[in-house]
Amino acid sequence: MAEEKQLEKIETVEAEVIDDEKVLKLKKPLSNGKSELVFDFEKINGYTLIRCEKASKKEDPSIAVQSLSQIYQAHVAAAAANVRYDDILSLNASDFTAACLKAQAFLLNTGR
Image 1 (cartoon, rainbow, N blue to C red):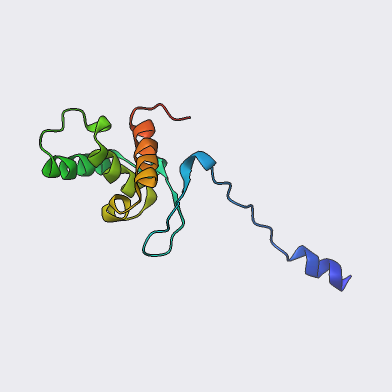
Image 2 (image 1 turned 180 degrees about the vertical axis):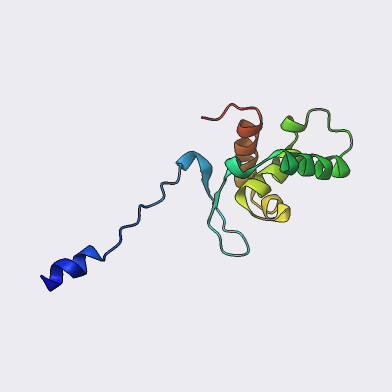
């Protein structure tokens, strides 16, 4: 009887399922040791996109189509992954390209 009461007190917690489409396993970890980036594009709002646009235009005023600019994509990727913009820029070329492609798919609504 005492064991049954003890078992009743155990609380189960559902595990969070992370969509693999949102995870980028890095070939080379960031300087802080992170070996993967998890992109949460659901938290991105208009304020975030405008801030990213202003920052990217400051770097390169000649950007014609923001969504196709790697500078803009890198800013959006950093915001979605909750890392610094410099962390995205310091990724090796294949990881950087993959991060930008995830942001581009979100921006152009071509992701799943």
